[in-house]
Length: 88
Ligand code: FES
Image (cartoon, rainbow, N blue to C red; front, side, top):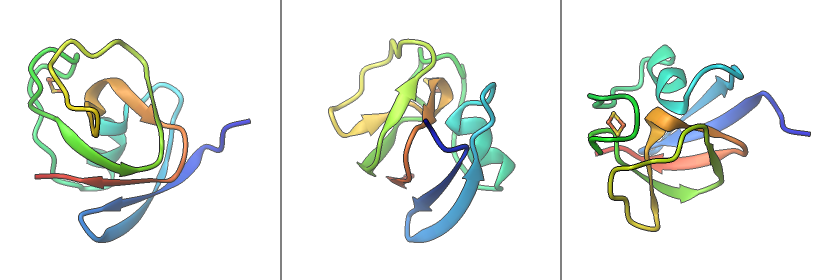
């Protein structure tokens, strides 16, 4: 069973997020005052593109923007483990 609280290491700073079932990783990061750029918030534009260094995410909606193997789109996924991400 998945936990509902995860540790997220963002560019060296550790925060704990509560993964609400109806919220995306982007919304959770924003709730925790993490500065992250976004635009469409639906996986089209790629503005929220973020490097996933470790951990796992699950996509709520399929991302349409181009992403590399080590990148995620926080606007359309949620954490399913503790994760380490690097936000530009
Ligand atoms: S905000 Fe557009 S892809 Fe995430």
